Structures are given as C-alpha cells and as structure tokens.
Length: 408
Image 1 (cartoon, rainbow, N blue to C red):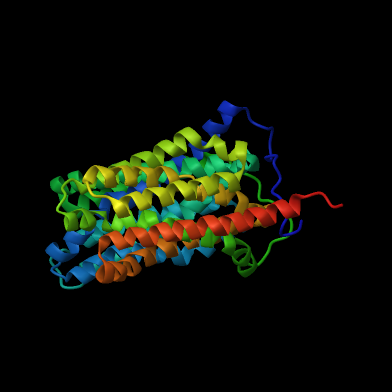
Image 2 (cartoon, helix red, strand yellow; image 1 turned 90 degrees about the vertical axis):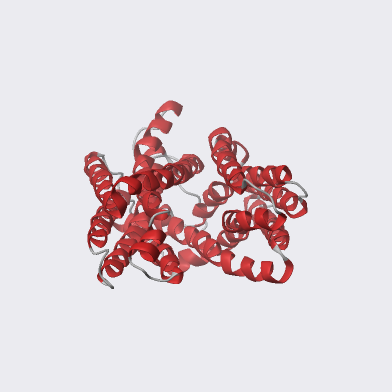
C-alpha cells in the first residue's frame, strides 16, 4: 500500500449497523473518559497544594500542571508506535496502568505534604505518569474504535473521543475541588487509583482488534505526511487556546463580570456541535467541513475582538466553540488517509502533536501580543490564524481534488 492510498473501509469483522457502530465506539471511548477524568480531578487542586501545602512558588505550582502536558507531548510517538505494532488495546492497557500509578503516587505525595522536597518529587513523578498515560489511552481508544467500527467511521470515532475528553474535564475539575474539600489531594489520589484500576480490569476483558499486517513507515515519514494537516490544526487551535487562557483577563480589562460564562458557552457549543453534526463529515467530506469550521471560528474570534459588551463576547465564544469543534475530526479523517492503515496509530499520534504544540505556545505568544496591543489584539491574531488555516486547508483540498480527478 502506498503512503497516499486510502484506508480500507471494512473493519476486520462484519460491517456493523448504525446503532451498533455507536455502541462499539462508546464502549471503547469510555476508557478515554476515565483517563481524562483522572486528568481533571487534580487540575484545580495541584497548584494550591504546591503553593500552599508545600510552600513553593507560583512558578513551580504552574510547572506542576504543565509538566503533565510535556509528558503527553513527548509520549505521542510511543503511543502511535505501540498502537501499530502491538495493537491499540495494548496502548490503552499500558496507559491505564500509568494513570493508576499516577493516582497512587499522588496519594503518596499528599502524605509528604510537610516535607521540603519529597512531596514535590512524588507529585512531579505522578504528573509525568499521568501525562504519558493520557497520551497512550487517547491514541489507543481512537485507533481501537476505528478498528472496531470500521475506518469509514473515523470521523465519528474522533468526535466521540473528543466529547468524552471535554466532558470528563468538565466533570472532573469541580469534582476534584469537592473531593479535596473533604480529604485534600490524598483523596483525589485514592479515587484516581480506584477508577483507573477498575477501567483497567474492564479494558482487559474487551476483545482486541487484529493488528494489521503490511508496510510500516518510520515515524519521521508519518510525521512529514501529517505536517500540512497538523499545521491547519495548529493554526485553528490558537483561538480555542486564546479563549481558555485569556478570556478572564479580557473581561477584567473591560471591567466586565462573569467571564466563566464565556468558557461555559465555548465548551457547551463545542460538545453540541460534535453531537449534532458528527455525521456531516462522513456525508460532505473532511475538507468541506474543515473549511466551514475555520470560517465560523474566524467569525467568532472577530466578534470577540470587536465586542463592546459582555454578551457580544459571550456570543463570540459560543461561535468559536461551534466552529472549532469539528476541526480535529474533519482534518484528522483526511490526514490518516495519507498513510497506510498499518500506520494509523502513528498518524494519530503525529497529528495530535500539533494540537499539543499549538496549545502550549498560544499562551506565551498571546501574552506578548496582549502586552503590546491589549487583550482584544489577542483575538484579532487568533482570527488571522483561523483564516490562514482556512487558506491552507483550501490548498490541501485543491490538491486532493487534483489527485482524485480521472486521468485524461
């Protein structure tokens, strides 16, 4: 199979019905929900533990959060290779072992809250394990879902995986704060260990999908094939990152209250679009949906940039959430077609790297822009990035049409 040949559309077993497709997908992405619930539980508690209980600076408190994302970023190639060579079930199981271990280490870190450095060392180890586990589970569940439901349902699998991701984070963060109020970081570690351990036992009982035989490209070639699509994804992710990182400061700069409502609108519309329009990618194709998504996102960011009242910024955030929602699955469906099906896991890992990079770099770059031009300028910059993503996607779509055109 050549690097540009499409994925086979037949799963390794009988083609499932529409209702069976959703059941198969949900039974796998459930494990992604558990992994991201484990991510969400400590996210609002860890900074206070490092700064308050351990007595370290706000810089180290922030590092305790960001070190998890570094581990996720660095483990993407491992996750993809593990999926391709040992199967996505192995990737999910390994990831859940790491998530379970991170819960145990978090509990141990809480026991050393009165020490100078042992508590921080155990916590950093827990955060690194959690980041790697997150990467292995989310890449594995997508590949497992595609293998179970069939490659023609790739967009639907990615969409549901995203819904479980953001749904778990939305549930996990307030639940973690509630738990910490009764038992501190220790109870979060215990709960994480229990839920991830139970998920591990359930995942072991699920049937794997066969490991595909055939050509396997080295990761560098897969990464090169994913780069055009990843650049579109990265440019389109700037707006999402700018809202999550700076909308509270943007509201405060205008003297407005209730910035959290903008984040709620962003997340709600993101999930609604995935629920209501996931089939549009299969129906219309990845490129058309991506083009419309970038246009809608750019419009929402422009609304925030020009907003003169909080309700206008709220509307803009909702529009951005609706537009950005289908960017990852629409481009992801087209991206994985560019490599053999035997490299599907590596392709998903390489593609996701660009999202990690974008969200990691948006904060400091947008901070520099805000320092020079104010917070509205951040959203103008993000809108320009979305337009650039639209243009690049149009170029990719044009090349795809040329490749698909019959020879004369």
